[in-house]
Image (cartoon, rainbow, N blue to C red; front, top):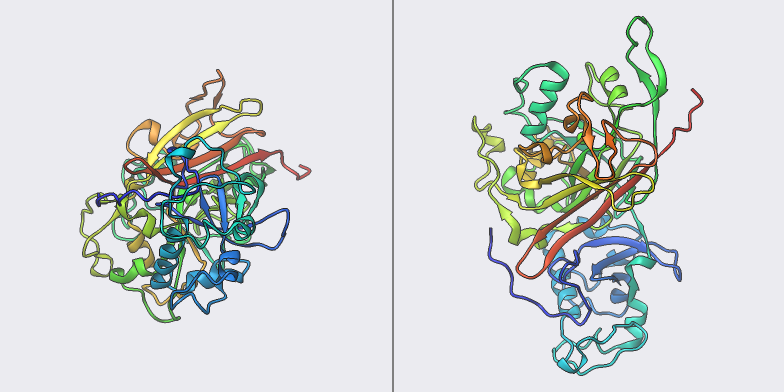
Length: 450
Ligand code: CA
């Protein structure tokens, strides 16, 4: 792991267990009660900093952002396209604007946008000491509406966890072995971007065609009875590549803007009947949920760790000079209707993934396929080696053969209507967190008449 950065003080109150410390500064797109126009923002503590307001005040003075209208857009695509130098310049500016600390005499002071005054000890007064601008630029997180952070042109879902791939082989094929290609090819399929929603959006149980029941020769059409979550993370693409060109694995990380949490909702009965020979379709495309805040690779740098050893060695186009993964603790909690505490049934970690972000991106473009700013590339289910780290109910219930116990005395093989699934994730620094917030969705009854 890289050394932790030096602590930075901020005049915005941030609790020690807040996911949104000044070391994080994730990007999202929000609207407020006072202004329904979506615009880019940064999360800090319990607040959102409106980047459009900061840009309008002329506080982005660096050479790459000074004349840009990227924060006057309703999505982050234009900012994503500007590349790493612009991202670093912006992060430096925002971190500086938020820096500064309260004096000792005001410890315990209840922070309020409307009225606060204190003796300032830091050097950067442009935002901190400008009452009018603070009123325009800060919004309480619990009062804003989060939008999709980008216009997502294309969405791809990988299959990068060796533990998950092995378990799926055992459950679906009865074979204790990976497919012949798995250790050579970062397997993926093209998903559906139109049904990607942000955290909190309700999920309707899908209907579809499932395999004939025992004794029947015809498939049935019915609401899915094997509804599942998949614990995943996904990367947003920054600058893309021209059609016909490749992004080499050595420079892949310059094309990755940041990461979000993802729930790739899956209807296992629909999936199982339709997926041969072309892979997932309607069993996946009814909904995919992402967390609204994109944590940048800059914020994740202190949490770089080694990925699992790769044996056999990958082909040269996938061979990284220094493979890297990230130590991101992940949890999945199921909250049945009327059980707000719920049960945390999975504790996993991003570092369990076999194929790295760089390898996924390089592989995606090796045939000349063009990626574009705002494209979303998901990791696949992130399962670890132990029972408690399996990233979906399909694995936890071993194909529906076992009950998964809940803390309220109930149990699940698959999800029931009214269940809310909450994914959370964070990296633990020295006295601070770099977190992703949550990615949640509540399952509602089917709308089909069957
Ligand atoms: Ca998936």
